[in-house]
Image 1 (cartoon, rainbow, N blue to C red):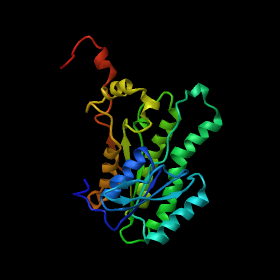
Image 2 (spheres, rainbow, N blue to C red):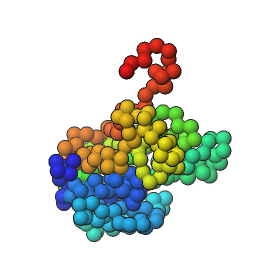
Image 3 (cartoon, rainbow, N blue to C red):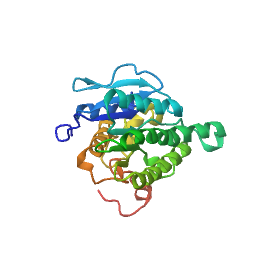
Image 4 (cartoon, one colour):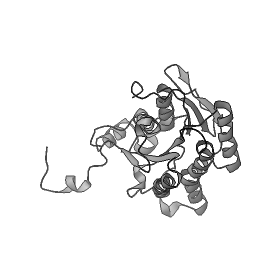
Length: 260
């Protein structure tokens, strides 16, 4: 991807870009030539690097509206422009709805839906007045399109995020493109929290038509494409990066029509 798409001279921000999927996205953008700024509440254990280039890290709590606005203005002052925002920060622990209290529910929606809105509004203030506009990429989830027991609030927020992106795309065209990357299951350093040990991870990977979990680089490559001029006519779209999705359970449960 990096050999085909050249993002040299562009500036990208990746929220939550210090580990897991976010770090994979940051590395892909670095490899494509973009200057990358990552932000998160905690400093990474090690710098995010690719192709001999390093992402700049700025500590930021995305729930602090004033701090978010100041952050994007700082990016603009330091780098002169902002071409891409990837709203990656998010997540939630496993918790059944019956065990959920209102306060934790609000936090899940705030982190996974309200924070990307806050960041997008601040980024738009920079992008709308610069030559070439900009590209905003939401990192959604297949949890937003199917039942998600144990992570229902996360899934609901991701469903709302996809809808928000579609509305932004209409309101902010033609200056700013807004799209959603919808990952399936991704193997990261935290996979054991979701899928268990290596045997569990392998079993889960076997449910994916392509036979493996995604690598963070797979999500990063999709973001590089949507950030580039090769996606100049793509806005308001949802790009599924899920290896073919999930094999319907009824196919295995049925006693007929078992193809090889």
